[in-house]
Image 1 (tube, rainbow, N blue to C red):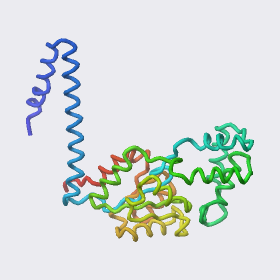
Image 2 (cartoon, helix red, strand yellow):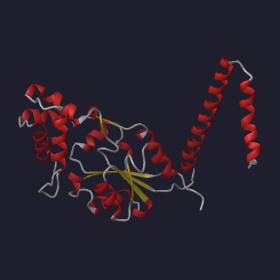
Image 3 (cartoon, rainbow, N blue to C red):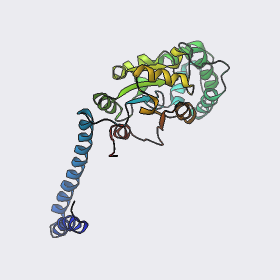
Length: 273
């Protein structure tokens, strides 16, 4: 490895030479310099992914992913959607008030074991009515069907690439979600359902996060032990406390990890022991 002084000298020499050039040439040379550095960084990342695929063992053998709020993001805010769809049904509540009602209803204690039983309509009917003060069944059905289509949702930047790279590296992938029966179609609409070795939906298995059973079902289906997998979700209780309760590590989306490229790199990179 070159001595720090020698490395510093090599870095400073181009800078000294640049200072002697006209401004236009200095700008062009600077752009080339940083472009080459950026390309080098991309090559390093790509090499790490390729290396994992050629036999070096990833740091984790399995990835469990939450759906709503993590892998699936809304294409537009709830308040905006509820308000725009509700205009012809007489909904005049401001968007910010709709969101207040939505959050209040969504987080209220639910008297039954599962919020999402089957298609989840009983739960969502209460949420929509509380959010908008509208109990018109036609309005509810329009809202419900809107969120059953893939174009109501989007994948975060880098999500598809991460799934592709991890799958190629032999990492087992699973969705673990508190959701209703619409989820499988949504994943198919967004062209990622085939990426997963398991899709575990609370309304289908009869357990909701943070219940340990739903995580255990996912681990059993992908054949990976809790200590060799990681779960990524956006809820402190449902995701982190639930996963940690069975010895499964959890990274909170937006806090512990902020990009899907970061998730990929942390899973594929095994540091020397």
